[in-house]
Image 1 (cartoon, rainbow, N blue to C red):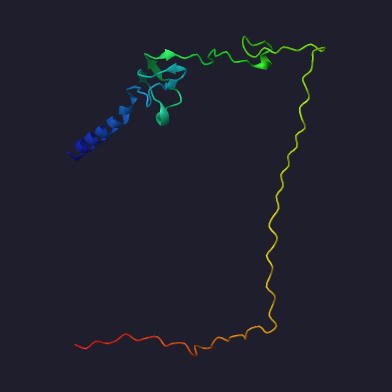
Image 2: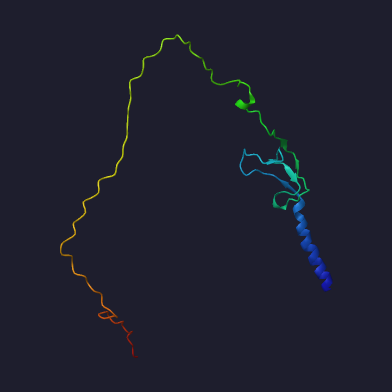
Length: 153
């Protein structure tokens, strides 16, 4: 009887350990922000396989209903290291050398400075300083501690 009960408990607890291998429906936390799994937009799709902390080394997740996302989107950026001219941008025109020059600008100068305030005058030391007060020794002159009053009934 005890062996049968132990076997039933063992089977019941191991069945819950295998329950994590099912499928999941992916719902994004924010609208418009995609959930990317292995280059596939898995928003509102079904994902099968282990992932997260329970992921094993040989298990590959499978996404059903997702759409492929291009890893390098064509956004039209210009990178000077590529060696080609951009298709848009600023058109720089070099003026001719014999053109009429504008008037020179008026001179302009501005400066700032900072300094600390002068120190305050120190009071002079008096000729006759106040006498030194000596503290009592060994508790002389100190008030004695009070004893609690005794009540009689």
